[in-house]
Image 1: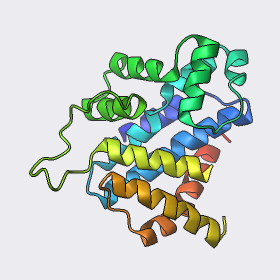
Image 2: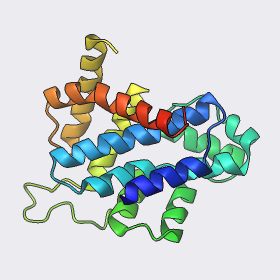
Image 3: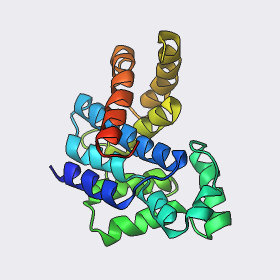
Image 4: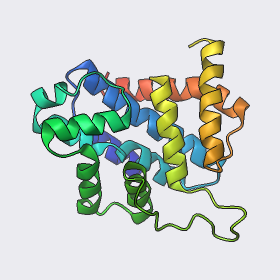
Length: 158
Length: 50
């Protein structure tokens, strides 16, 4: 239920006006749906996984609202996330990743979700969530793993 | 999306899934991919985002 409320609320705030914006939405929805399916298959929390996918690039929607002209100067979507972040920094002076991470804190998004997204956006940060609950030989799958694969799946499909 | 394209995407994603210790059988991904795309498109349409 919380994911549905979040989805409807976000759709009312971030209304797309160009194909780039629509692709941004399609990407967020594809990652959310794929995350939920992968989480179900791997016996993870499907609601949390869906929200993780939906919110993983929420900072990009904020950039869109901040300055439409600058946002459109980023170019066509999709491109590699790394390329987009470099462009964001050049054009806006900061990246959507930094905004996403700040928003997750500000909105008090549950820790498993915010940690998975933070680690996804900033791989150099160590995930505080243990990768293995029982043994070193059989690491447990985390929300981060699901998000990472779902994100690639969507970028390939777009 | 034709079958060849789906197989190509599935091949790529399996490598990634394996590196994350994720169980993602080829048949599951091949079956799920069109559904994921379709469900996201339907959601976008119903929310007026497409």
